[in-house]
Amino acid sequence: MPEIETVRINWLNSIFLIATPILAITGIILHWIYFNPPGFLELVVFLSLYFACGLSITVGYHRLFSHRSHNAKWPLVLFYAIFGAGSFQNSIIEWCSDHRKHHKMTDTENDPYSVTRGFWYSHIGWILLEEQNFSNDFSNVKDLQQSKIIMWQHRNIFLIGALSGLVLPAAIGLLFGGITGAVGCFVWSGLARVVFVHHGTFLINSAAHIWGTQPYSEEDSSRDSFWLAFLTFGEGYHNFHHTFQADYRNGHKWYHIDPSKWWIKSFKIIGLNSNLKSTPKHSIEVAKVNMKFKKSAEKLLRRNISIHKFEDRLVNCRDQLRSYMYEIQKAKQELKKKAVESKLAVKSKIEKLKISAKSTRNDLRQLFKDMKYEYRHTKMVA
Image (cartoon, rainbow, N blue to C red; front, side, top):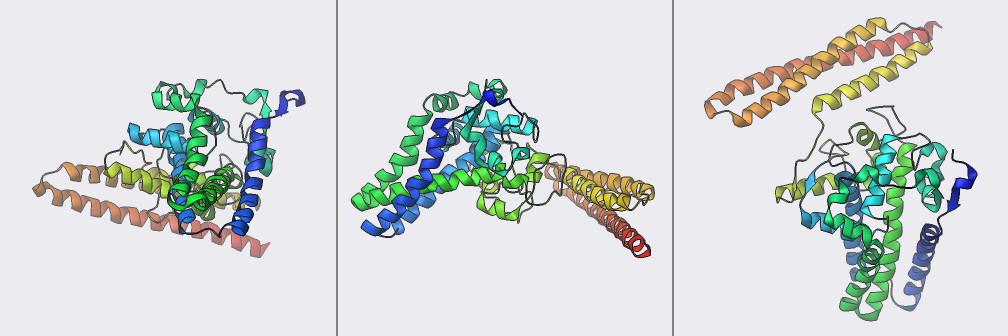
């Protein structure tokens, strides 16, 4: 913990973060009373800016700039710079510097928003305070400082944020709805939208390190949560993200709710994104197997049950599964390059490998059933 004299209130952040929800609620009430309830115009502008600013944080600030999970051409970089500023979460340089430090020092005293200091500190408290040992020198974001767009945003962050986050919605409202539309869009698409996007991001720093599951790793406090993913453009699969940080996906399954992943993939199709990094399936599978075994083994050890016989089976099955899945992936890559007459042989090889992998998965299921039986049987005897 830093010494008390190194901590002081960040008045700019505090005033803004306290004032925006108060102004938003007050504005909504007054607009409803003196003008009209929100209509189609307010809804469209709210959703447009909510997605533009929210995705600029999750895709731009987070997955692209902080983790370099893919490459993006300058129109997208400019989009993220403009609407990321409109989310009022600081510049790309500052945001990414904090975030890279968070990943490097997760759950330690050097983590800028460590959940070990409590929910409210990791959620918003760390932004309201200035601590000497968390002052940024930006030495960990030198790669980002090479971008002219990013540095332009860093120098003009408040102006760009005010224009894209507050003036733009009011101007659109004025253009299509007169003074009533201007006030409505300013209140809903400006103030209220800022609050929603803020706390969506903040929930990942706080709730995603407290509630949820840890299917891939227990190295830190990160958790997976479907509900948080639903609320945060897919960021809620946080245990996966902390385990495989460079992956452009947070939800790696096709059915995982991850709009940020879909956005990145869509812009790859039209040529604005490239070099999408994804974790090999065998690495994900092995991580899940290791975690499942770890949790099962811990239960047995609490009852003083030896796990040696299970460990040998785990190593054998896990290594086989990794090998089969790696060979399947390798064969699929070969399939793209082979001539038509050679493809049948490769497809046959893939099918055989899939059968072997399925058999190994069945062996793993039996292993975990045996561990569960051992635990229950010992409990009954005791």
